[in-house]
Structures are given as C-alpha cells and as structure tokens.
Length: 140
Image (cartoon, rainbow, N blue to C red; front, side):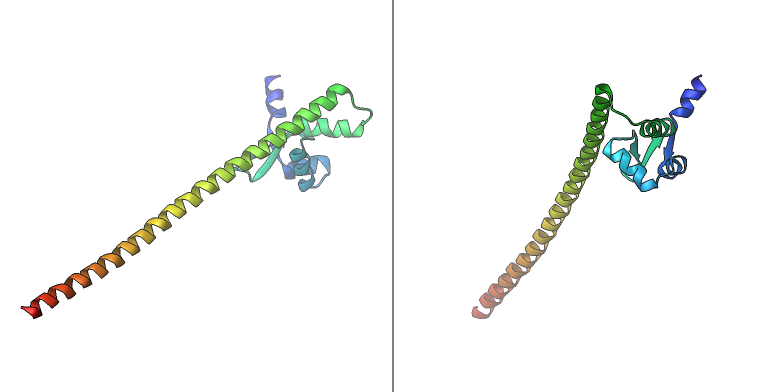
C-alpha cells in the first residue's frame, strides 16, 4: 500500500501528462497555472510538473462534469488562490533578485566614475603643482 501511495505521488512532466490525457503539454501547464490541476514548478521556474493521480482525477471530473458542489467550488477556489499566490511569490523573488543585481551594477559604476574622476583630479593638481614649482624656479 505504501508503494502504491509513492507511485501516485510521483511527479510527471507536462509531456508525460499530455500523453496520458491527450491534451497538449502547454494546455496541461495552463491548467496547472490556473489552479484547475494541482502541480508545481521545478528547476527555478522552468518546468511545471504534476502527479498522475491528480491528472486522472481532473480527467474524471471533466468527464462527469455536472453541477459542482459547494465544497468542490471552494476547493477549486483555494487551489486557484494557492497557485496564484505561488506565482506572485516567485515573481516577487525574481524582482528582488533583479533589484539586487541592478543595485550592485550601479554601485560598481559609481565607484568606477569616482575612481576616474579622482585620477583626473590628481593629474590636474600634479600639473598645477609642477607649473608653480617651475614658476618659482625661474623667478629665483
């Protein structure tokens, strides 16, 4: 029994889900993103995966679609909200990472500009000091 439970919880790719369901892989991914089919993103927002049991449950529900009960509607709403929240959380993490990279680049650019300005200013002051020294040497 434990082995059967492990098999039903094994994640499958969208291609595998498409072969089982007859849907296109993109459509299966869309069902997951909309929260109609349980699934999750893996590999840092690259691929969606679901379980075979969840897919078969969805297909059965679609086949025998009738008036939905209040509990089923609530479960669908909760699943949709959960999926949307996960998507928004991933978007916030991505934005945070992009913001940190932008701050790092702007700090590096500012330091580079400061270095160029200070070297230029130092050369200018050295040149003025040499001119003054030469001016005093010729006067004496």
